[in-house]
Amino acid sequence: MTSRGVGYQTVALRRHPVVLTRPLVETLAGLIAVAAVSDASLGDTSGLIIWVWAAWGLLLLRLIWKIAQWAVEFLIVTPDRLSLSSGLLSRRVAFIPIAKVADMSLQQPFLGRLLGYGELVLELPGQDQETRIIDHVPYSDRLYLELSTWICSRGQI
Image (cartoon, rainbow, N blue to C red; front, side, top):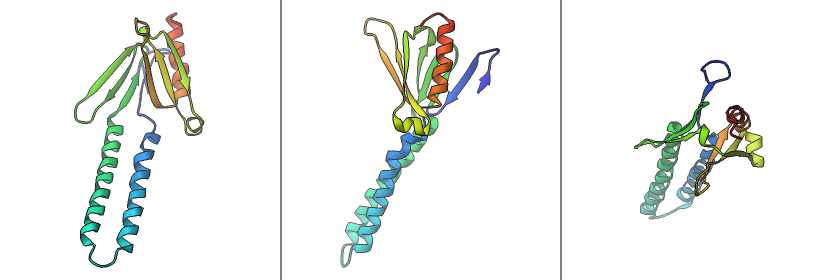
């Protein structure tokens, strides 16, 4: 965290690592299945074993891709705006001015409360009453309180 004066901070966060759980579990389960098939296969099935290991290699590449995506995705929060930067090959940056936030709520599932992440739900005014959901935010309760303070100090909510 970087301070910009009294009460003003810039916070840069990655999504909670729990977003990597599913690809990690699938890759490990695939490895166990491939090892079992390789161990149990007898006779002339070497072609099949190569295909099975190649399929697992794709799972491993997918896991590496997900980790790389997670590593370059950031949520940056300042008293003026929220920005979500993402994209491994092509960068995408979405800005939400704090002044445009009409309402904000925090949702934390049971697992999120245990592991320390939540979901920020931002409602933006306009004809469509657009809702933006930023999921798997670490320290979401503290971030919610800080954002609420910034929004309320501007007299928005």
